[in-house]
Length: 244
Image (cartoon, rainbow, N blue to C red):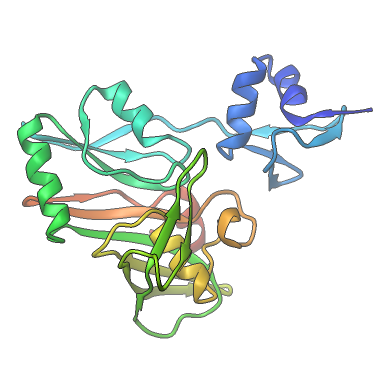
């Protein structure tokens, strides 16, 4: 007899259906070594789940004007803002980990947003793709975003907004390349849709044709903002593939 995955998980873990569904939706549940993608999928009643609990939020920089964390994957930026009580300066996709910054005052928030608009902020990400990438490349393709319960972006030459991603190969191991991706612009899902469009979807990016993996292999590693340099160390999933 089959049953919906989130209901089976709720029974196995002794938690509510809502919490079980969130764990699956946020990518923390595995079956047979593979991440379970659909909470409402029908599975056998004897299915055994492996659950990876969300990691805690870790502060990586703070002064009188700014507070920065290493956002764990699965955490929603606005939910973290509400929890911390500071003002969100920018956001990261739920599936992306790394540097996330908050302002402690409206005045600093205005200065930070102005620096973003003037493209003075430096943002560097780490991304893992399948295949070999031989050299640095600049991707300039306009991005159009459709907003809704789950935003999705596409390349659209006529209606899209300017988007620039600069990729540089850092390491190559076992058929995969670790890239640094710098983004002078900051469109929704920009790195993900740009890499997918040129045939290099990010490992674990189920929305943009990436091969299944334990997580989306995209991490905000560095940000320079109003004289601060903020660094988030490589997550364990990156270390396992490429070391520190």
